[in-house]
Image 1 (tube, one colour):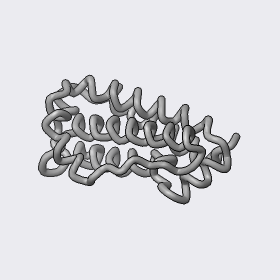
Image 2 (image 1 turned 120 degrees about the vertical axis):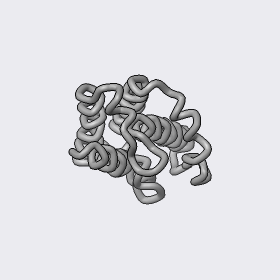
Image 3 (image 1 turned 90 degrees about the horizontal axis):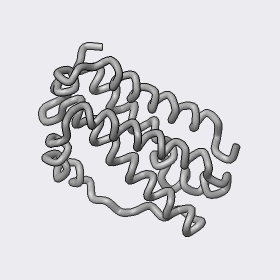
Image 4 (image 1 turned 30 degrees about the vertical axis):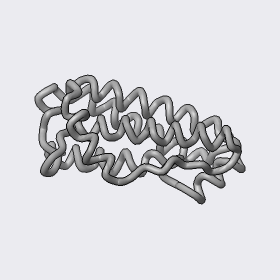
Length: 145
């Protein structure tokens, strides 16, 4: 396996957390606030967006055979909030799970040397569990669990 099996396992565990949250929470719980402006559903929409961004970046890396991450301004989260808030809560579970699953599968196909180069240049593009778990921890803490 070209990518460190522990990275693949950690990514898979975070995808499983998305699945678990989606299966056990009601729509009302998905609307539960997480911080000042976010809800659990917005957290999932955010994760779906950033997993898709990581997948696009990885595809660019494969095409160029070197790290080639897209440049995205940090304000994208604030600018995306209205769209994420408009997504029905249950749909955010589907979006987050689809994006995580597709990204995990693509990470597993990376050539070892390219994976190492991308890990050096932009570790969170490959180690998706780091970003997912950060927000899933916040969402679960907000729900009291």
